[in-house]
Image (cartoon, rainbow, N blue to C red; front, side):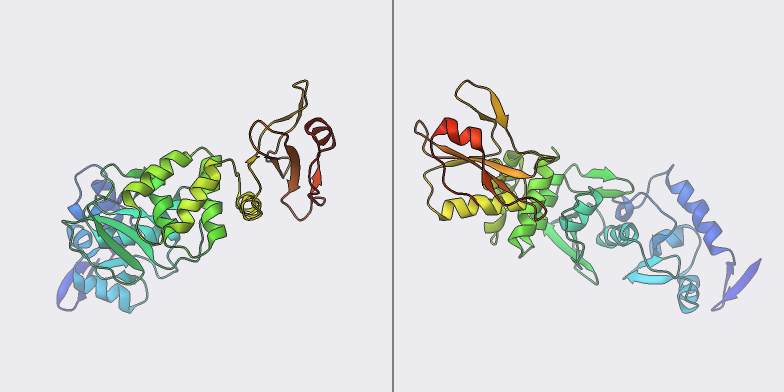
Length: 309
């Protein structure tokens, strides 16, 4: 079937041609712009459409009929529905061009970090300084000398290493609790260590990193969640002589008594100066739990402990 669009003859079945072109692209080299994205038939650039034999006139026709959607300058969605998060991320990388990698909160979503906020409108893309692309639409392009040389491939997308994604996400947040939750989650799930995050922050950190630095120190000191970071902050504000979080509690004979974990949602904190008598307290961190209380056997073995309730 031949259809005439704007004086130019085009094949009518545009989608079939794009699918064939996409399959071919997986076996051959792609353009520099598309190296950050494994080709998909639902998101494409004007250049990739031209390579498939689809002209600008045909693209304009599809858009005017509501069959396609213009996502960004030169980047189109080949259906008229709402783009998925993956399609938006793919469009951002295609728009940003050579060397682009996804970072920040949207990269953490690709890593399945549950604490990553879903309300961040702009997709952060890192590009090398040699790439002159500017931000547009829902894409924030950050040109940097520190663009990841070895991005991680998640599905079809090039994503920054998780340490860089965490730092970039946290530096853009104003909620200290969310920052703490992100840092605690990635460390607890062993996606990276607090030391890894500290090293990344030292290299790529900028102004506005106070929340991030504090969270890394708190998690590195033993906090396992945002509520535990907050309790630790309360202890420090109370000028307690010293404390530890999430430690094994033993009696004088060395027998194990308790420890905080995911199934037992409370903070075990040993309060007191090293080498001196210390009280051991347990503070529940969920509303459904009972009020905070002292551990009886630990209190008996360690001397007196303050009232935690």
